Length: 120
Image 1 (spheres, rainbow, N blue to C red):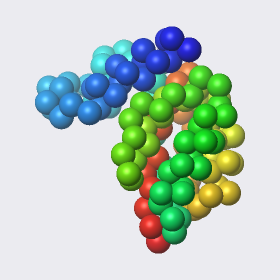
Image 2 (image 1 turned 120 degrees about the vertical axis):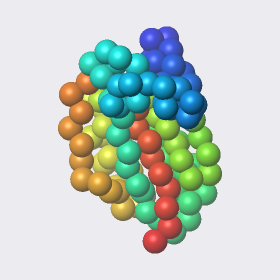
Image 3 (image 1 turned 90 degrees about the horizontal axis):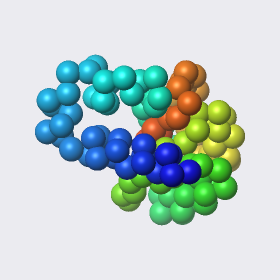
């Protein structure tokens, strides 16, 4: 759990700082070599009530061992999650709204998942 929190914080700092991203020569914008540990994926969730959707999504994430909310805004939730738990989270979120794009198949042990909440 401590390692997941450390990774989540480290990647939040890097992804939240435009200056660091601009200086980073790696194509993913993540530190060199980190692509073997963590992969970034984005999903859009479309539903009518964004406030309820965000709260229900946080509750679903809270049920997943080792999943950590890294950053939260009114329209975005960034989560560090074990990649093997992505299908379970997608299934839970599919009950709340429409998810795009189609399922990703990351090959890393951890995924930095950006959930963007949008209205239809």
